[in-house]
Length: 102
Image (cartoon, rainbow, N blue to C red; front, top):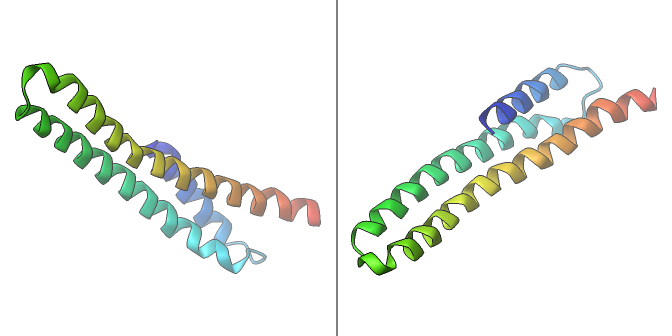
């Protein structure tokens, strides 16, 4: 996912240099960076919290507590993918939509 986000950021920065680029395109790169950071930090913190939560529960409940907390941490990864998917659609529209209009 890191490479996808970095690639989309570079792509959006290149598209912003075009003279016919729409004004809203300047917000795509910051949104991607925000989504990337939320995903990275949220997933890392969520996994850390998940493994810390396991330390304090009885042995028969460790699996359920760990799986619930890991699932919560993976929601942050999903947020990053959603940001990337929205940005990808926007960049595709700008890239190929402008070509067909010419």
